[in-house]
Length: 319
Length: 291
Image (cartoon, rainbow over all chains, first blue to last red; front, side, top):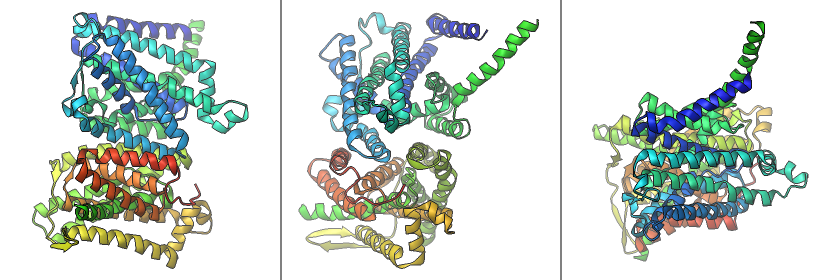
């Protein structure tokens, strides 16, 4: 019965995502695509932050650098898929840079401060090199290639859907693999992992090489989907909201950041709050959930699902 | 030009030290990384500016601003920082969540201030303290005051911590809060007083910054960032380290601003942060604080 419910739920979600371009307006398509990109941001953040235990939360910097590199290369390379790949590859470099800093800096607070500094300085960096980045005016980015085909939102929506679902499946597979289990152990207790003979340094390097590209991918997807990139997109709020997504959804399970991204994107829309207070509502919700229900919304739903499923089965058997 | 750079550097160092003092004190005593400290000081400064606009007495305006900053600082300590820290049983993980919670507040404050005060920029219009000539260059009374208050903040706590009974208790809590609680020290009261002092120094820093430059909604975040960077570079919890780094950053900011351009100030500061942490991971003057 539980499996059947899971399948029904899965089919409903898949049907909604596949039929969105046919059933809803461009605005809804845009919102769902943004939600999908946020899911990718949040899940990649969850993997490096909550599972690998690395206080890397300069999400806006990693996503922004990838997005900007792809956008700037667009002026010389006409094929966007190539520029996007270069942008994603660049996020490996950014990840390695943060690994070197993390390996050298002692303590979470120090590393968190470095992250904070980068989050805030990124905007100034973009403004300082206006001749390349176009400063606060931003860069008009070409849509996915061929541009004539992807000029409509529904067509771009398919790209976002395909890449996001593929990436989420890949992250899921990574986390279920031996590597994922080792990295989770390192995140929970580095000393214990080292004591059983795991080369923690090697695995941490891999995690800094593997997860930031997913954040970079979300960054390039967002900029090419929107057709525009500016410093305002990569503001400090983004980094924190992605961490809050895991806290809202539940940081111990894969679906946690996905559920969290739905709530973090949906609640401000539902309550029709202005952009400044969007962050406040999400933040307060995340902290309340974390303090009072650390398992998150996904954990609560899971518990509800497990407690109702046997009842349904029993009722079915009795009937 | 060299004198201009030096004078600006010293006054900037004074303000930086005032801002970082709160961060350093809070971390040094309780191990709390409160990122909302900048916006707390800014809130008090906005209250003072609004009261000045309403033509209230200057002393009353300053008192209102200081009182607001201290009240907000203590409330955040009691209802955000301590519950978040204790929810994970303290330690490094507790601190990380205090960082997120207070970082969230830090980003939320500008929206609140804009809605309450209906303005984005504020000018602090305190009575002039005069302009003086030192080393062929002029310095305002408030620049001198920022240097003076910073020096006083450096000397007075040293005296309090080493020569008074209360200071000894604070040192005890700093070294081991658990043992201090066992021998009857009211640790929570010490944390509250520390939060109040930190908020007050952040307020003074914000007021002096506003008088010398100007205040805007993002200033609080900038104060926090600089406060933290200075505190981390100096060695978390080290007052001496904070003073040394304040001087270094004052010089670098001033020189960058005069020689390259203001937009590069924050980039150079971040580069200095990375270099310091790579070559001195525990800061320039590390403390022996027990976690």
